[in-house]
Length: 462
Image (tube, rainbow, N blue to C red):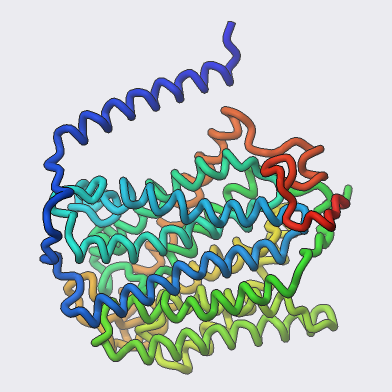
C-alpha cells in the first residue's frame, strides 16, 4: 500500500504531466511572432531618453541582488555562505525565466475581472514589442527582489530543492497576482476611496510580499538549533562577517536610487529629484533611530541594528517616496527605525527565528510604507497608473486614501501569508523541507553544494 507521501507525489507528477501537455497545446495554438520586428507601440515610454533611464535604473535594481547576498551571508554563519549565495543567484535565474514565460502575463496582461492578467504568455504575438519588453524587464528585477528577501528569513535550515520550488511559485503566482491588483489595473487600484490603493515603488508589492512570505516559511520550518534555550529565551547566533553585511547595505542603499527614482518611469518627470532626496533621508533617519534605540536598550552602539535601520527606512519610503515632502520622509524613516527594533525583539519573543531580520525590515516596514502614503501624501504629484491625477493623504485632507491603503495592507498580509504558508506546508508534507539535524549542524555548504565558501576555515560549531 502506498504511503501518504507517495500518493501525494504521484498526484503532483500527474498534475505536472497535465500542465505540460496543456502548455504544449497552448503554444501550438498561439500566433508565434518571434521573427517579426518589435513594434514599439505599447506607449510605456515616449523617448529614447526614457528607455535609457528605465534600463539604467533596472540595472541598479538587478545589482541589489549582490547587496542582498552580502547582507544575508554576513549575518549568517560561514558554514552556510555558499548555500546563501546559491539561493540569491538562483532567485534571479529562476525569476528571469519564469517571469518572462508566465509571471508578466499574470501581472500585466489583459485584466480579467480585476483579478489576474490573461495575455502575454511567453511574450509572444503582440507582446514582442519593445515597450512591453522594457516593462517586463523592469517588473522582473522587482520580482527577483521580492523572491530573494525570503532567503534571509529561512536561512541555514531549508533544503535547496524546496527553495527552488518556492522561487518558482513566487515568480509565477504570489508576486504577479498581488502586483496585478495594484500595478496591473486590478481591483485594488480601482477601490472607490481616494485614488485607489497605490504603491509608488513597491513597499507592498515587493517588500511586504517578501517579508510576509518569509514569516510563513520561518513558521513552517521552525527555529535553528541553538536559537532558543530550554525556557524559550532567544540566544544570539552571531553572523560571521559584519564587513560583508555592511557592504551589502551600502550596495542596497545605492541600488535603491534605481528602485525608487526609476519608478517615475520617465526621465522627464523631474520629480525624480524629490524621490531621490526622500529615499536618502528616510534611510538615514531609519539608521539613526535604530542605532540610538539599541544604545539606549543595551548600552552598545549595535552596528547590525544600524544596518537594518537603513534598510527599514528604505523599505518604508518606497511606497510614498514620490508623494511626500522631505520632512515627512524623515518622520517615516524614524518610525521605521523604531519599528524594526521593536519587531525583531517581538518576533524573537514569539519563538520565530529570522536570522537576518527580513520579516521586520521588509514585512513590517513594507506595511508601514503603505500606511504612510495614506497619511503623508501631499497632493502635489499624480499616479501614473490610473486616472486620478494626485495622491493626497489624511494629513492633507483626504481620509479616503488612508482607507484604501489600509485595505491594501489587509489584503497583502492575507495573500502573502496564506499563499506562502500553503506553499511551504505542501512541500513539507511532500518531501520535508528542512535539512537533517546532522546537515544543519555541519552547515549546508558541503551537504547541499559540496563546496564550502571558505575551504581553509570551516566552523561547524553552533
